[in-house]
Image 1 (tube, rainbow, N blue to C red):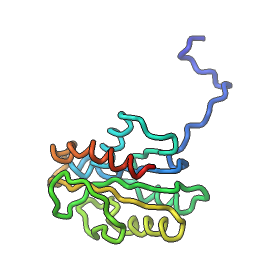
Image 2 (cartoon, rainbow, N blue to C red):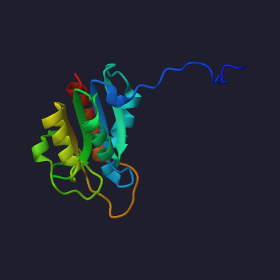
Image 3 (cartoon, rainbow, N blue to C red):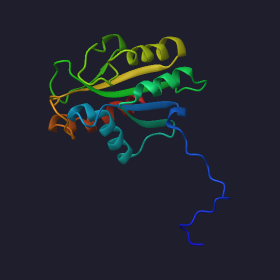
Length: 173
């Protein structure tokens, strides 16, 4: 048997689920809508850089954040803090990174799968208000969202990846 063959009887540790960590960083967005794919791009970027404490889990939710949040709401075990990373359009300078309060999350966004749509924003508030989870939202201002499918971030939004890493690392403590 070579080192690459697997013995089905061999005991293997189950992979650790990121949502079972003390802090869960969730990247949200649709990678087919340009800058809206910032959240997933951020998770990939931060994963590649490493250096996060053991208690921090990373999860690319893509457009499926609602299911994850719903499951966390019902779960007996939850992270102490959830940090949502997403792209939004609130009229700031393209690529500007900022933290936004849940009460200030804009009600409208072009992508149907964002944290800004109900019931997602309600689930975040439920986790905060009734489950005792500290919920933080880190946002980057989009440059522009394309009228048709386009993969990849604009230059100002891609340039915001490192700054976002610094902010998220600070919030992960």
